[in-house]
Image (tube, rainbow, N blue to C red; front, side):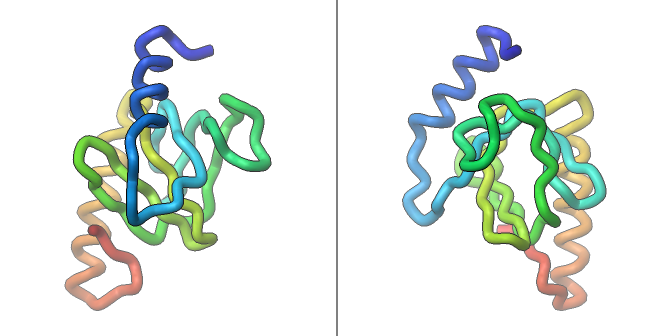
Length: 111
């Protein structure tokens, strides 16, 4: 169940526009586990509202103004609405790994 604050953040994220992206879902209480996005997902085809999401492997991390967008190897693009405890740290850790991978000319990248 979402708190009032989480509901407001979700509505705020739903109202934002991402002109160059096709958003496939919004994730609350997000964290990164083994290069996958985990959290409660909303507005996603094939999932009930608030159902637990374990995404495919993350291919791109995009910082878009106030939000983080996560693209997966399956072509999904998720908006992170809020982080679980330790979630921001796990994302920043993966971001650092992506930056290192870019130096090695890996296919994973950060935008």
